[in-house]
Length: 599
Image (cartoon, rainbow, N blue to C red):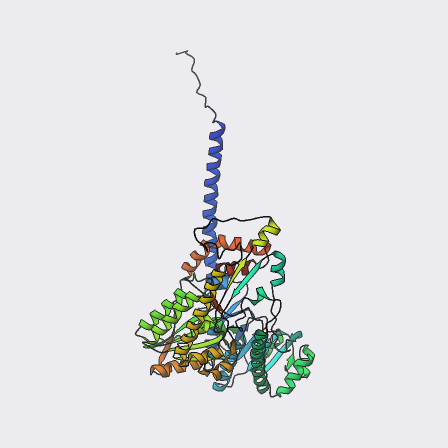
């Protein structure tokens, strides 16, 4: 036996540095693994959520009421699943509402239409579009239309008057008091902060009031004149239409609005603005017992079950909705992306199946470069086939420029259009930095005006002259373009342009639009111009929608930026607005401000 003692092998402990490195590496690997697992489970959850929203499954059963749920954001085109999932409020679309009403008129399963209103973003023109669709629905069948809301905005009530019966919650209200436009001005705040804002616009464009919110404390005379004109035009048209629908006198409605004797539910009933006070459940019971609707089906689900026509001839529809911006869309936000619209127009023009194009515009304007590119694309597309423009709530400034070369322009009486003009704004923050923060700047220049447009010192005379020439030259270009597109003289266009906003009713009288009506009329005109029968054409949307997976991946990639923006919004007032202005191109053709004419 070997009795030689053995030496046990001992493990030398890791040094401090190696221990920390190993721990850090383990932490990183664990974190990455957890992130991957979280990502995978998030994708599974999102796909599951999207799948659960799928409403394209065939409808079963019969005898139902078709619900137009107008209680959230109302867009022109149908939203994709990602926008619906991540949106702050329920989203519905005119596209789905119009399709469901068209199909529902001849569908024996549809026993009634239920207008569920309240808290929506509905514009006057959208309300008018739907009202005309409801009247067309009634002309094709004898099915009842019932409107209900916990509370009605004025645009919602305007739409509700097309119904056979209007019901409001016993503790609700009807916001019936006429239209008011209220503008917030920031000059006093900027003065206190030491910020000076330069506003550069053509000398003749007194109505182009964009930027005045930073340079004035009240409305200019020109702006007050135009605002008074278009809100009076809108309200007078709305009152006359509501009076005819409800078989009341226009004077009665004006008196009710003046005295606020239609706002409270009891007063609204007494003055015949509504027919009954009840709860939503009462309406559902009435739909079942009186009209035989065993259930209620939302228009979104019904529209996605409508059998789409796949015919030889097509009419393309392109939606230009939101602010005009350069670049391409990621599919998760609503804006008029210049590159996307140009491609859509080009593709539709080159598609042999497409016989005509309908361009649906709902935009206050925006970036000049994107607007110019889209306008040229309209001109090019029109060389091969008709391009009919259908204006929704807004088609102003750059939104009008992309419309003016249309073969025909169709607008609603309440559309806000025109605003043919341009402006530029430049902030100067020298006093803010020096007096409030103690920050100063100094310069070294190679040329006289190297820092002539710096944010940190007053605009140089040469720079001011150059910018003034820039806006003056573009205004001449803009008005000449409108003159060429509309077959008018530039002198006439200048006399009605100057940045002024008009309603569609006024614009028709001035020659800025051809006829009054909605999308159905635009489609009929498109078919006539193309020499085809509308009933033998299918409507195809350009560009084609992105897949849910593509949208989801793009959404995940930008998630971090959105989280940061959300935190900044909570900390810094008006952060979103300031960020938007910082991203804008220097030269803008857009409406002066966001107009709330629901007041």
